[in-house]
Every structure is written in C-alpha cells, then in structure tokens.
Image 1 (cartoon, helix red, strand yellow):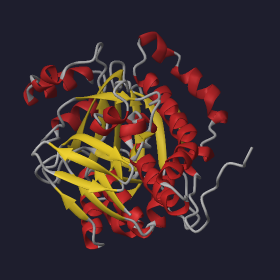
Image 2 (cartoon, one colour):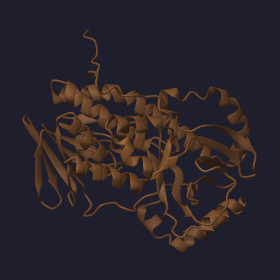
Image 3 (cartoon, one colour):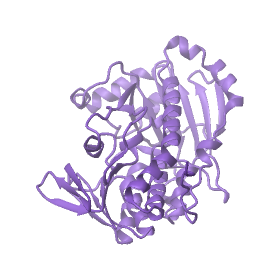
Image 4 (tube, helix red, strand yellow):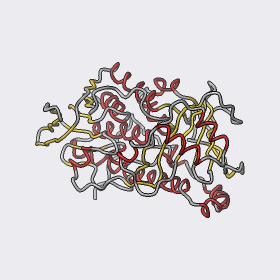
Length: 395
C-alpha cells in the first residue's frame, strides 16, 4: 500500500513514520519550495502527545529540543493569583509536558522521517485529486502528478484536501484574538524555570515562561474585533506592532520589559479554530490534524492531537480490511475526542477575550472551577499500538 501525504509540517512527517511502522509506504508532498526551519513560535506538547511520540520511538528525538513545563500559574496583572495547577499531566515514567519551538519540533521530526526512509518532496502544491477504484491521483500546481492507494491531507487550517473532499466544508472560525510572541533576553523574572505564567492584563492576555538558559519565552493575545485580512496584518510594520504591544501592556511593566527586550517579535496572526468539520473522508482521501479539527492555541493541544491522529490512522489502516473501513474506524475513534478538545480551547480562549466587567469576575470563575478541573480525559489518553483497533459490535 502507498500513501500520498499532503503537507510537510508536523502532522505529515509523524504520519509517514507511523504508516511506515504499520508497513505502509508514504511520500510527503510539501507546497513550499523549502523547509520551514526557523518559522513559527513555541508550543506545548502535553503528555498525551508525548505518549503518541513514545509509541513511535520519537520522544527521545525531541526530548532535548524543549524543556519540561509541569506547572502553570494564573494571575491578574495586579499580582492577584487566580489559580495554579499541573500543566499537561504526567506519564508513568515521570515525563511531564514540554515546551518547544515549533521550528525545532518540525526540524527534528522531518529529519527523523528522512532518516527512516521517508521521502519528502518540496514545491508540490496540491490543486486537485481524483479517486478511482484502484487508487488516487494527486495533481500539483507545477503540472506534475502522483499516484497512490490513498491520500492523506495533513495540510493545515487552509487545507486544499478538505475542500476537495467536501466543497461545502466550513471555513475556520475567528475567535477575536490575534497571536504574537517572542524570546526576551536579559530580563530577570521572579519565576521558576519551566513554570508557565498566564497573566490577565487589563487590555491583553500574556503568557511567559523562563527557559533554563535564562531566556524568557512569551506570547500574547491582543483582542481585535472583526477578523483582519492577510493584507491588513501584512501592513503592520514591526515598529508599529511593537509600539502597539507596549501600549497594550502599559499597566503591566514586566510585559513592557519583555517586549522591549525581544529582538524579533512575531508578526500578528489570527486565532482560528473549527467547531466541527462534517466530512473527514471521501473515497480514498482523508484529512487529519488542523485540516480536520484545528483548535485554539489556548487548548495547548494542537500538535498533540495531530500526533494522536497519526498513530490512530496508521493503526486503523493496519488493522482494517479496506481503506474505507479504516477511515470509518478512524473517524469513530477520533471525532468525539477532538471536538471536545476544540470546545475546551474555545472556552479557554474566550476567557482571554473578556472585557473589563468579565475580568472583574475572573477570580470568582476560577474559584468555582478550581475543584472541577478534570483533565484526565485529555492528558491520560493512550493508544495501544500492539492491540487491534476496536470495531463496532455488529447489529
């Protein structure tokens, strides 16, 4: 069996590695002409994502690229503490959540995929695909084609594969927040390395964490009513963006110091998610990762969900009698879980976008929710590779 994987970000290489372990050949086709080294901010890998990587013998590949972030503290910019709790669970060997630069994670997974014999082809932007009884053919913008037994769309939020499967597929939902961040140098913070600090400022949400090497990694979510276009965001110069962020954190001196001590601040991009995508697969094509269920960064689960997807899909293809049955098994095993994660991310993000009155109520909200923090369903998820994927009981 041969799989065509569209998208060479994080989901694509992990899926190719998982398929290879299941005895399925795969080639990854990336739209851009070059790799994405150095691109992107940082992210959290929760224990459920790390567990999926461990299943594929990939955890040691990424372990030293990031650092452990086992706890989270939530405060108002006044200093009042709202809550603190474990961040991302713990595996049976003591492994906790890790924070890692997206480009470092991508580079490590890509290099390991290539080392394991996966072919990654660049400059292949998907434009169309045709499924037949015996296979599927992908057509690319450069006029070339590729043929395989199935096509997996790991092509992200703006997935071409998603619209090929379902031309009526919904568009991503804008959550009212922008994203930005950077890496500050020479700013002392009263924070233990590896403890994430989430600050609800009067006008903007800030997250920061001290790296063991002394850097401070930070991210912010400036509210912006009405989804800005790519052109609108591209028109914001680095100087203007820095000044806007400094103004937003005028009530929080540490935020201003972090911004001023950051050489390069990420340009703003909109926070988007998908409440649901009705159709994940058709004929011999299927979507995974953000293409099927993008979640707000507030969930801390985007990359981890893609890793779970990769392991689950490979296992279903290994165990099912047909591709169609494998796709159905995959959706049955994944849909309820990922849509629950998307909903959780939306709730977390909504708190960041609260207005003045809403922020006054945050202490009460966190006090009421403190005893209701049941995160086991999210972080304790394990995919038993050596067992056969469960099938629904016959009716």
